[in-house]
Image (cartoon, rainbow, N blue to C red):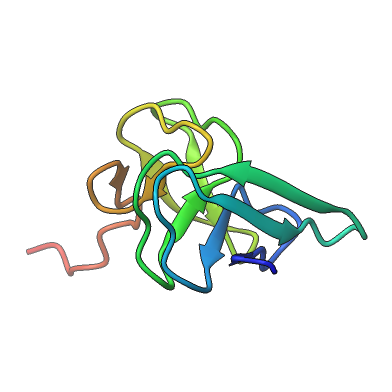
Length: 97
């Protein structure tokens, strides 16, 4: 059974479709006809992101094929991707005074 969903072929994360525990095998469709598996190295709540490749500090987190943040630390395969290891990279849209 697949435990995660890859949304776009460009994504470097998948979304957990059930709670994942450390050591769990995370299986997902790579969107090219290939089913891949990685091993979780920490707990991931349902609907949260999991890294499917090593993402070095400063590299973009990609979901929906778009950059949604920047790794604030090195993120290893199978790690929970969340506010603890992602910085916001949205531009500041507030009017300048």
